[in-house]
Length: 608
Image 1: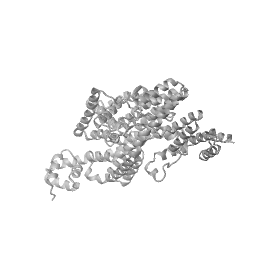
Image 2: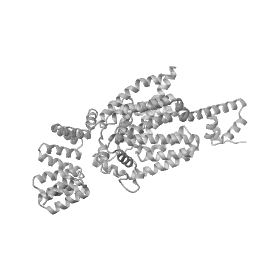
Image 3: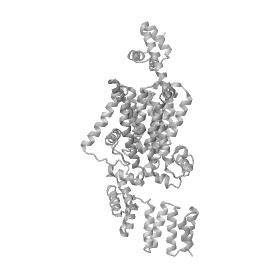
Image 4: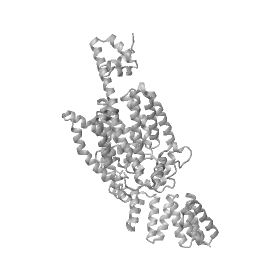
């Protein structure tokens, strides 16, 4: 005879009419057969038989869901796959020939280490596979942006198809297709797909969704192979983007509210361990990240105020999901009136209240609404190491909101007894979202398009004013270039790059004194701008002040040793000063570093 504890009896009393026999046994920590025997002894025969019948039906439903999610579902709904492939192909076709943009230029196009599979040496390639992926693409296809971007698009397609199957573990096929199709074409996701440097977000999302899918497979079928595959996908995701560290939180949340944490907690431990190790590794890179933000983006360190940061971020992402109009690379408009802030706070609180409402109403929707917040957590850190709002950050979190939309449409269709309503809704919305995405891809076609598009939505972005100055400079409109570079320095007074570019423009205009003044300002804010040293040296050399020219070149070489361009300028300055031996020695060093340097070779030929 089985004796139950008080807590077991209480659990049984509260859940006997709600849960199946399997779920009751798991919740009470008993074997199913023991609980069955206990109920048979203590319940009337009719009631006992009803519980057994309910449990058998529930088990059939569970088995059906698993089978439908993988085999039967794909066989019956193969046309869903075809439609999703067509949608992704149609939306992203016009992005394939886009150029390298923004960070792509430094990391890919002009990166001398692009072909190096392990640029940092040692075992770093095991911790950062991004350079390896870029190097392999370069070795196979050269500097063709199509193939670098195609990796992102294929991963986006992979995420879309994985969502279709994954969501079938939770919802009916119509809802699964609804969520996947909106994800396939939504314009908010463009930055994480069309922009090559946004690729870590689309790639890591694909890997995380695969890891989640195989975790569910391993859990339902109790196969270690699926669990190992889950761990492999999780590892690769970690090497792509910081967001991957939240995967164990997703699994924990799933088991806590939809699964069986008491039974499966051991499966989560290795995933948590890997995530914990990776978090410590990322903390080790924190100083490097802060330095990069200061020297490259001129961002001051410190902390965000969570009371403004979190409502701003969450309300902004929700707005862009439901009304994807003001899309931009630079979400710089962060000055709000009190009324605007209160509206954002109200939106944020309302979302949290809605999430809690579904905690009682529907645990599956609660889970996916929580998924939206959980996957944003790495970018909601109070440390100023991420932007408050960036569209690529919302790539994976958006799935949670698409799930809510699908649920609302599905419930509405049931209420009005019109089961085709989700399809009618998609027929209306998908063309609009697709067209907006196609237009947004045009914004990402080249640098000029991107900066002009950002100017419409980001008038307070110093980076974009600097970019616009470059645009006007390349077009020969030097007066407007000066205006844009000056505006950039007004918005960000320590913006060394903008001062450097302003100096370049003044130099083109023949205003040498203003050029020198602004090169010196650039170096005062960013001593690592060796280009400013080089240009100052050229000015001083033209004025026959070779000592000052040599001084700046030596300072530039302290920042960038063995730089062929600086060394060539140094050799030229030595020759112009009459120090032929030093000039010859310096230029020969250039040719050792860069044998194809025609400029150095031509100067060397002129030295007697």
